[in-house]
Length: 380
Image (cartoon, rainbow, N blue to C red; front, top):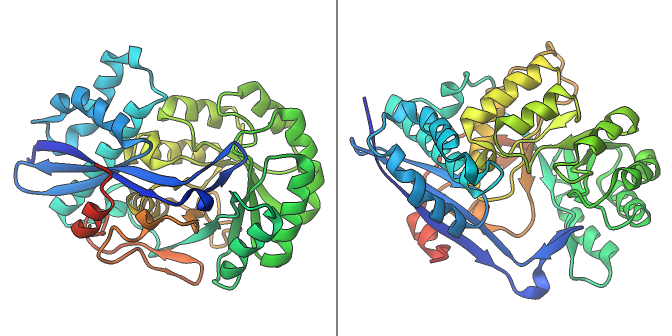
């Protein structure tokens, strides 16, 4: 049985001119980045994964956890992560340590698939579909003086690309929310779903005010309306909100997801595989959501490796409780902002067409790194 020989991390980064910064209600950024995890086995297999967040933090944690993995059976790496949590609990489980372990888990699954000649979606439950629907994630705040014009310029190029849904940023004020949502609805038309993202910038009372104002525009979900740990606030919204709540991108490990799911504090649960714990935790989240009859939609905002992981996970999800007709299939977030780390890292990017992402067909994640591109975006 194959054993882990080495794990290394490559810091990836892309920086824009300051005037091209974009982002959310809490602030803008002119940089994108990710930690590329490369896991090698004793028999020469190499798997890749993504650790979300600042790569320097993940690399520092790698010095701590790497000795636990070296020599471990490839298929037993799940137990190593649990042992690290048990032994080093003082370091916390809401941080870059979990992001690193997520990247290692994704890389291990990529290597497992390559060893067995199976796609990851088959490894984690069985591929149920060859392509998955994606939503256009953009509509960012920018440095422009005219935010309405900037929003229109972001949405218009994608309005005719077949996306079944769009997501825009709101959260600066309820009045501004109405203006942005109204403009977005006019541009994307009445048929596409429209989701909005507050990025936790509101309190519960402001969320309810915003929801009442934007409800006439048929908003499909309101994402991260509150800070991640405002459990009491999410309970208030679960009881009073006129629109569906989606959240989960900033939750690490299964512990907080179980609290979110058991409490039915969101209609749509949004794990990011590059920070929640990888495929191991995502599979458990999918099972728990199925048991509570909640929808899922993975968050993706890093590199194409995290996107590939999300696509494989969604491809393996049962349609339960639906039968032949699924009103709203799980959507994969597809970032349409400026981010070459999404597609330029691969010899062939994940194919998007007619509102769907094709599930890569090769073994493991099914994507091949272009190492010249990796070196180009190396932040070291």
